[in-house]
Length: 242
Ligand SMILES: C[S@@+](CC[C@H](N)C(=O)[O-])C[C@H]1O[C@@H](n2cnc3c(N)ncnc32)[C@H](O)[C@@H]1O
Image (cartoon, rainbow, N blue to C red; front, side, top):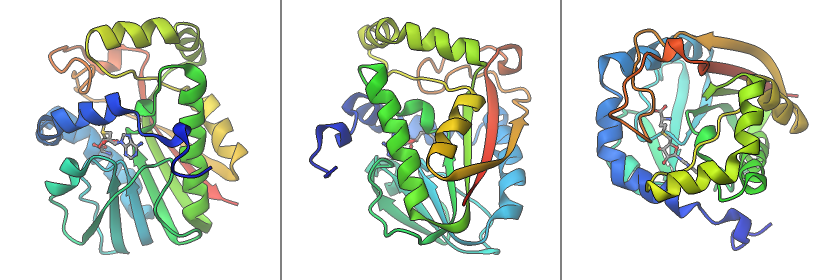
C-alpha cells in the first residue's frame, strides 16, 4: 500500500478532534487522578526501557525516565501536541501509526498508550484494518527481540462483540454529537492480532484505575464516574518480536 491509498488516509474526525482538544488533554494529564494512572503505568514500563524508544501517539506528554534509554522518539499525527511537548531528551516526529516514517528493525522498545481505541473509522472493517496496519508497522520498525508495550482501555470479550454489532449505530450517534468514534478491544482479541504479526504477548497486566473518574477524557470530559466500577480495564500488554 502507498501513502496515497485511501485506507491510509487519516481519520479526519479523530485528528481534528484531538487538534481541538490538545491543550485540554495535555492539561488533564497533570490532574491527580489521571496522573496517578500514568504514574502506575510508568512504574511498570520504565524499568524495561532501553536503547531507542519510540512512543507512538504520544500526545506530546511522554516524560519517561531516559537514563536507561538512548533517546525517546515521540510521534503523533497531531502537530499541535508535539509543538507543546515538554519532555527533555525527546525527538518529536509528526507521523501516522499506520505508516510510520521510520526504517525497519531500528527500535528497541515501542510504547502505544491509549491510542488503539482511537484508530476508528466509519465502518468496523476499516477500524480493524487500521489496527492491523498499526500493529504491522510497529512489528516492522521493532528490532528482533525488541518489546512493545500496549496500554489501553480494554473490555471483556462480550462487550467487544456488542460494540462490533452496534458499530454503525454508535458511529453515527457520536457523529451527530460531534464526537469521534471509539472502539475498545478485549485483551484476548488484541493478543491474537499481535501474534498474527509476529509479536508474542509475554505479559498482560491490569493497571489499577485508582480514583480516576474521568469516564471519557476525549468524548465527554464532564462525565464523572469511577472507572473501577465499570467493566473497562486499563490493560498493559507487553509483547516481544520473535
Ligand atoms: C488519548 S491520547 C493518548 C496520549 C498519550 N499516549 C497518553 O497516554 O496520554 C491519543 C493520542 O493518539 C494520537 N493518535 C490518534 N490517531 C493517531 C494516528 N493514526 N497516528 C498517530 N497518532 C495518533 C492522538 O493525536 C493523541 O495524541
